[in-house]
Amino acid sequence: MNAQPPNGLDAYLGRNIREAECTSSIPQSSSRWLNNAMVREIIPIWLLRKNGPDFPVEADHTLGLQAAFNQVVPEEEASALFMAELEINPRLAAHVAQGHQPTWPNEFFLDFPEGTVGGIMGHQIREHGFDLTLGMGPVPDDLTPFQYFRRRARLVHDFEHIVTGGQFTSIGEIVITMARVANVTEHLSPKLASAVNAYQAFSGLRMFTRALLHYPEAFATALKCMEQGIYVGRNSPPFWEFRWDEVFALTPAEARKHFGMPEVDFIESQRDEAIFRELLEV
Image (cartoon, rainbow, N blue to C red; front, top):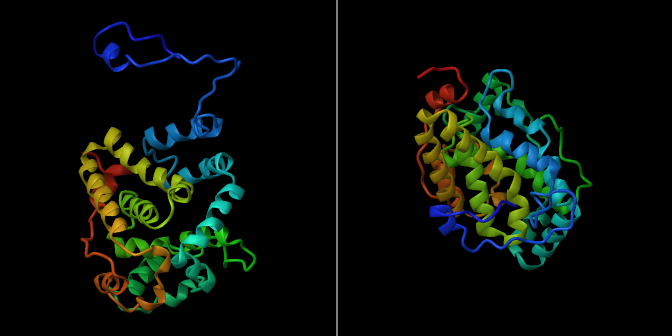
């Protein structure tokens, strides 16, 4: 712990600092997140690094932050919170009881008309190599309710891009991650929402902070994405209730109306993405 600030603004802001007695021989904090060495190492990389061509943005997820967060909040703890939520949240309980799993093969989307939800997904599969299973294969039948909830959320992530207005870019990821954070906060109890939101919140924040620090020309769009994500997440029904097979033949605007979501704009971010990935000098 630093000594008391000597004078000036630091002294004013730090006037209520109270030094805590510590008997530990290693750094300790009252925050279990800060006490995790992997979290301390990976979070600065996620939030502060530049997007060099040697390590693509999406590869951040290979650095082990999910495993570190699972150490801080073990699955048993999060699952217990989830099971308690099922007792007081009938909408969530109904969703889990239905057990609706996304099992559509990639080829299913290749013939939908352009401009529909299914057609937009087909374009991403055909032109950009999207795999709706995310390389994980089909959803197993023996998952716990919490495991089912988390895995299904990953498998429908790309559809949520389409209705929240976030383009399939790194900058566009801010829209959907912040929409999810806001939506989960709106529809789940605080402690469970915290456990569910931690990883995806940092997933979106890393785009936001890197744009601010290293790619300021793209930051205005990043800020717009943040604002829209929070707005659409707060003002929509629970995302987990959405039955995507009901809207494949609809336009995104029609799908939003079908689901009871607010109307939002599609945020164009291709130029900002080129700046963000260091493919365009400005």
